[in-house]
Length: 170
Image 1 (tube, one colour):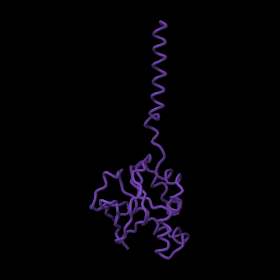
Image 2 (cartoon, one colour):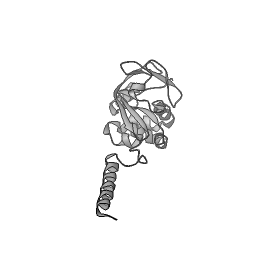
Image 3 (tube, rainbow, N blue to C red):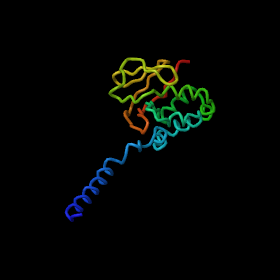
Image 4 (cartoon, rainbow, N blue to C red):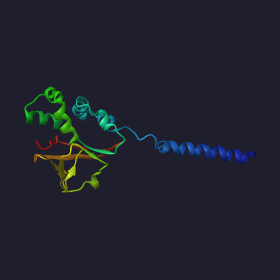
């Protein structure tokens, strides 16, 4: 092989390797899934405890995509006060947790720009809620939550951070 051709091929190979690294590797590595993303953020520790207690970890690790409206620890603290229960009592009620947590999940990746304003958004739980133009969510009981941070992209969907736990119809 001629020296100039060898130099060219080596340079091309090195450039290709650099380009692949810069692009983040292959599409086979989608990044942290929804559960891993929530676990990595301390503001969701109660939500993660609830997901574990309800046995829903694998349901949120599916390929998806899923959209999760994720209440913060402050939202859960407010719910405990509102319901007059302890965190331990809430986490012990697996059936209730499953109903409430699946009410926060929607099939598909729904980014902020794609949220259907004013239309019923059907959840995995089977109920629905609506979102207005100010990103306020009205749940099945008429309670209002606000999306305080949108479009946290995960390997299997998207998370929208909310300031109040949503409740399905009684």
